[in-house]
Length: 300
Image (cartoon, rainbow, N blue to C red; front, side, top):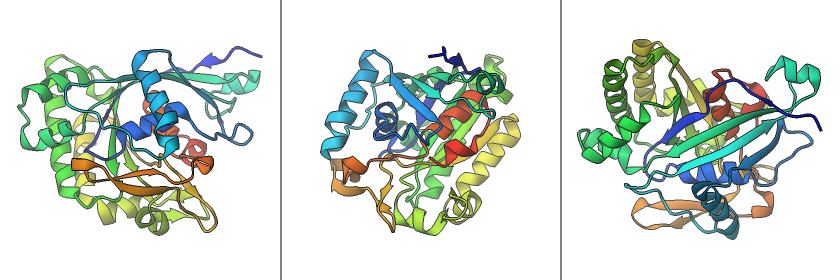
């Protein structure tokens, strides 16, 4: 077997979003990568690193998600770092040299998961000392993955939090002479398997979500903030859809059911783990890593 090529880019990213948006579940499904399809998928494998945080997450995905239990949320004071490698099959759009030589390509990713409370603190207590420490750490990433519940109706709250995030990061970037144009922001809408998202905005012909219609209808204020952020910084912004649970059957239905999980409200769990096919998890990681989109990765 030929030695894989390391893809050029940076995999040092941060993940932030409100409570119950599915950040930990996103990462658990990604590092576990259940029921992959190596024959038809451009993804060869996802390999979890052998460190404590990553292995704990992978064990939780196997032992908890597959047994239809909910994952515990990340809390303030915790800063789990997940390390993993994504191996992709040879493809001209991914890497012409790899395609010509028949070698897989690899991305080495380090993703830090931020507690959902931080998203609230951005809006309500932007000078909170705990929040300030997280933001100090966040400035050194190559990009940020903002995960938002696609079924939510709190557009204004999200917009207010993102406006504060842009302001606080801008202070740090300016003070430390960090090039803002190189920063990448991936806005990812989770729970895309839900009928309010899938049935209304997924195009069965193109096998893609109608992103502009979705944002215009459901998150117009969030869109305005991100457009302003992009305009002020000159940085790159892209939107994605994902599902940690996926769909099953024909006609398609969400492969999840709901349970009450304390103060964070209703959480989803796997309904049938033998049909567990998450989608949209790798596309935003690839974009943050390389700055390039890939239509194949968006469709799986």
